[in-house]
Image (cartoon, rainbow, N blue to C red; front, side, top):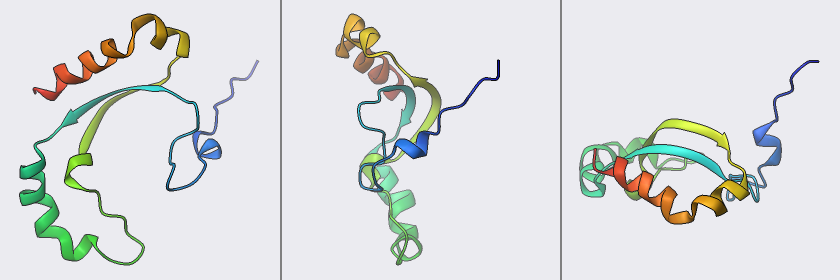
Length: 95
């Protein structure tokens, strides 16, 4: 039996809502200090990133995804509780 891969982008509603409705995924992100990102990345490259057709990323949304665990069963999220996922995130934020 051949395995099939679900088309993530086929489920995306729009660029404004760029995540499939009702889908929860597990991620690990490295988060950065907003002030440093603004000073070191956003400001120096503003002339390049603020052009027609480009969508600059605000400093508060800058991150590096180090793991994408794919879709997570909503029952698992309910069993663990939202705070468990926030706890994982806050632990990595200190790096």
